[in-house]
Image (cartoon, rainbow, N blue to C red; front, side, top):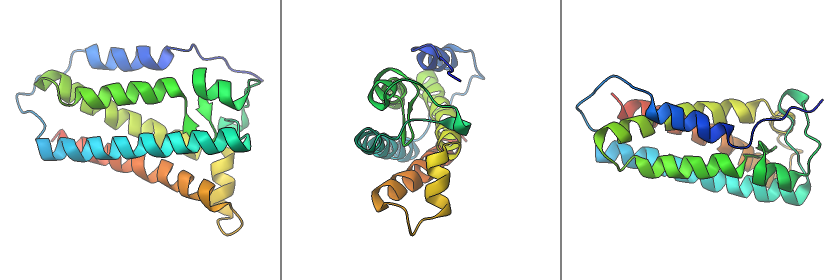
Length: 170
């Protein structure tokens, strides 16, 4: 069974989130709290890029809930939904752009921080629905250490990013 997701669907969703009218808040997220969110976001992007490298090297295709794509791991990373150890490049580029928007004007910064909170939740859930991650976590002693470290980072960092973003928005 092949599920095709439009290439720029992620960008459209993120763009809609940023443009959607929200509750007007006059308080700008504090620089120290934004720095924490940016730090977790950058760390996640680094972990995901390392995960993509390992997944392409070891041919670990994405298979959320056991649904596999027919395309190669490299093409899934470059123009699709991602690999077993990372989201797609389009999603990572969108996250990097949104992370940069946290330094913008108040409204943009708040919306970008909201988007990072939602993205962190989705990344967290996405990694947990991968059978590769499930197997690595079930048998950590038998798992290759690089893969295990990437999976743990891809679960912990998005959760921390979401928590930091929610705290910054208080």
